[in-house]
Length: 240
Image (cartoon, rainbow, N blue to C red; front, side):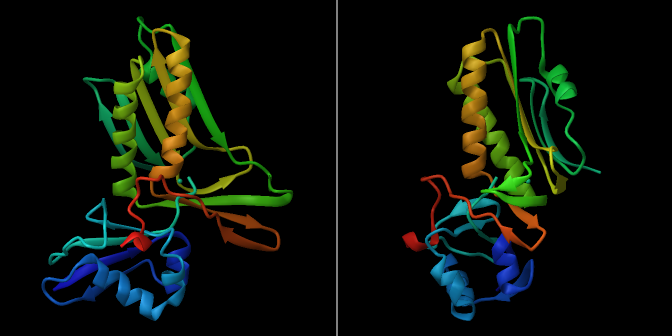
């Protein structure tokens, strides 16, 4: 049977491609796909403690079965980034999107704000000009778009159920970003300020550790994929 295999971030550079079709025996498990590439690229085996596998845009353990036509993704540690895909929920007022255009925070807050709201909190993550003193020229964000958008919406709904807020929006920028530009914006509206602040903080924390978005930093003397860290619930390949 044939499956489609995707690579992101540093793993894409490692194997020299973004995707590949792979033929594997009927009845194979996800472990067979991982082992196929780990044997050919030893660095993948070395990084198994930080790589997560996904099957059809869902986190999956290596013991999961694989079927004809499945989409398998190798995901390195997250370091999260014309218009892109979006999920708008008119009945709840939430909004989640990926974009390659500058993010308009004010327009986003106006989209959510209602008369019953007593607070609106806007968090912007912006590109800084250095990393540990090393001057940064610009950043490039990429992501597993379908899965990233799905997980952003999942996080937003969770937060709306855990905190006394009215609406939440999350928008992440992709592609090249210059110094001072916003890479991610989270907007929360609520009757009172405390839950709005708490939900916005928890929102960026979960997004950076759960959503498959990666960034590459470009310097005058080179470039590097930023190594992040998965949430403790992610099924790491080394956990088989």
